[in-house]
Every structure is written in C-alpha cells, then in structure tokens.
Length: 547
Image (tube, rainbow, N blue to C red; front, side):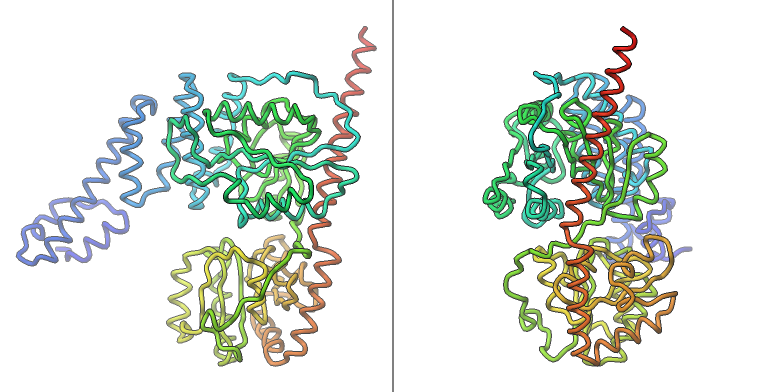
C-alpha cells in the first residue's frame, strides 16, 4: 500500500491515481493526513472536471464562452496554463466563423499574449502560429479596408511608420524607438511612431484580457517627450471603440500620413497590427521579430534580432517568397545613463569583485556547465561575488549554488529598467555558454566593462557572444578551464580590466552601435521600395504590351 506522501507526490506531478487509494487517509484521526488526502481528492476531481469541460467544448465546436471561462479558471487553479491557449484560439475561430469578429480577435489575443508571456508550448509551434495568422487574415478580408486614395504618392522624404503595441519607458521595443530616433537619417527619412494600444482596456471589450496596461501617454512619458523634442510625431489608437474600430483608425492614419514603409515591431498578440498588416496601407511592410513573427503573408520582409531564430525560420520564409534577414540590434552608445548604482545599496562590499550576467531568458541560458564554471570561479576568488540580472525562476541553479557552498555569494537582481547603466555595478561581465544574450553582452561593453565569452561551437547560438567581444575577450572550444583562466586574469589585474573595458566600448562604437542597425534598416527600406517600384514598372509595361 502506497504511503500518503507518495500519493501526494504523484498527484502533484500531475499523475492520475485511483481515488479509492485515498479513502483510508480521508477518515484519518490525524488532521494533517485528513487535510492532504481531501486536498488530493479535490485535485483529482478538478482534473476530471477539466477533462469533461474540454470534451464538452469539443462537442459544440468551442462555441460556449461560459464553459470556456470555467475551463480557463480550473486550468489556472491546477497550474495547467499550457493547456489554455489551444481551446481559446479555437473559441476565437468559432466566433469569427459566426462573424463575431471583435470577440474572436480578443479571444485569440488573450491566448497568444498569455502563452508568449509564459514561454508556452502553443506559440512555439509554427503550425499553431500559422492557424492564428489565418484567422487574422480572415477577419481582415471580411471586414476589409479600402484606402480613400491611391498609394502612389511621391514624398520628398521616405516616410516610415514604426508601429508598436504600446510605448513604455522600460520595454525593449521602446528602447529601439529611442535609439532609432537618435540615429536615423532625418534628411532622407521622416519617422513617425504609431501605437496600437493593443493591451489597453477598450470601452467595448467582449473577451477580457489576462492583463491590462495603462495607455502609452502614461507609461511612455519620457520616450514620448524625447520624441517630441526630436520633432517625431506619436499617434496612439483610440480606445473608445472595439478592436475593429481601432484597427481601421490606424489604417486611416497611415494612409492620411502618406506612409511609404511600415515597420511592425509587434507579434501575434497584437490583432490590430495583424489586421493593418493585411490591408493595403503602404508600399512596403516589414515585421521585426523579437520572439515570434506575425506570420503575415502580406509582409515584404521579416527582420530578426535573434540569429538563432532566424536560422531556424529562414527556409520557411524562402518558401513563402518573403525576404528574411538577421540584423544585429546594436547598443545605444549615446544613452544618458545617470548616476552609477551604489554597491552599498545592494549589500555589496566596495572591495568585492563583482561578476555579473544579464539576460531575458536566464532559465535557458544559464546552463549546468556555466553554473559549474561560476562555482569554480567563486571558490578560486573568495572576495568575488556573482550577480544575476534579469528574468528567470532559476530554481535548480540556486540549489546548485547552495549545495556548492557559494549560495550566499550569489545575488539575484531581477529585471532592471535601468540597463545597461546598472551593469556599471560589475567589474567583469560573464557571457553564459553554450548560448548567451547579445543585448547583455553589448550592454556591458557599452559601459566599458570587460566581457568574457566562450565560442562553444560554430553555430550562431554558440558563437554570437564570442564574435561580439573579439579574440581578446573570447575563449575557443568547449574549454571551461580556459574561460576560468581568462576571468581570473581580469579579477587579479584591475589595470587590465580597465584597459579591456575601454577597448570593448570602442568596439561597440565602431561595429555594434545602433547607428549601424539604423543604417541596415534604412538600406532595407530603400531596397524594398525599389523592388516594389521596379515590379510596378514591369507590370505597367506588360499592360501596355497587351493593349
């Protein structure tokens, strides 16, 4: 007979057991046993209820919103959030088929936004993403948008509309906007920023979102003020209508402003951008992909900031006859950083040597090999501490540091709004391996911090950090010993640290600043416009020949 704790552990792992196995404990005189037994039984019953609700939704083609909400609630209570996206997308598709377009779009938005936020499995599957893109295209075709004028305007400057889902002073896309605004060629291009306000609560909301944010004028005050000083206009979608109303308002704004190129710095959690992307609103459309692209067949090009994701997707885009390319999102070397962080505010001794790593996907990038390397470094240098900056649960990494006896010398700063300025708190930046965050590496380099990286292989994921820092900061081969030796040299020699840090700052300025990113984007815009004009001329010639 299994013990109660064994049964509890099995249930907590998601296993289904026979309820009868708990009955002897449910009547126990021991209150703790009775509590655990009844709680396990409740969890089993809820899982069965969830399965029955899913079957009931399947029976009616996911058309009942009340039962769907019950399914979502139970899934959340059980911690089975990975199972919620599929049924919600199917409900959205069912609503769209019934011509309840706004309801369907809002449901799909909910499913995608939560799954992306939790790095779920649903949106990591390309077939699911293509299903979502198909629903967005279906609505765009059924609702339709016809511009009030032709798009054959002849602007003196190329007009670029940069579309985001929202403006917030601490978000990645907003930092890109700020960098682009400072570095683009204002003599040749006219830039405008357009926000769909997709995550802001609308007055006519039919399917409530998991999270709402305040409007861009409140969240992105500093960015909007800086854009205003640079005479760059900012347009935000009205929220006094439904999602269809907001999409048409944005499309009308693009046509009114005679936009030549639209850059969508958005993903599939923004149905407003998806619909506008499907409509005829500009000559050229570009989608910037950070985690996942929009998968819109109406795009002329998809630009990836992540070389690994681009490598995995480029053959797909080639088959779709859509241009795709990787462009490194460089560092903003002109960013005003403010006062440097004070170590005393974080309990860090002034005499300590601070090693640091920063990233947005630390659960994945801080590998077992890298943790072992950091442990060996901390053991070799008793005055050193290690600071982890960014998002990530890092449960097993924490346990490994603690079991090695160095847990008290490892700090967790969490996500910081003030990067890269906060990286000035460290003495040496450690790029993770086998893969690491390019933005963390560039951020450290831009504030004159030496970076040590390992070229763990020749593929993009394993070699990108080493390529950024150059030979002086990189080790080759899967040699943790060489990595430790390189870091140790920097720990022991402050003068060398300073020299290498200044060298890396110069390397960013010369090769990896955002000015290079802006130039690549401008060249892409020119190329796509020229291709479109050449295509139009060939079509016009064929029409004359036919006549």
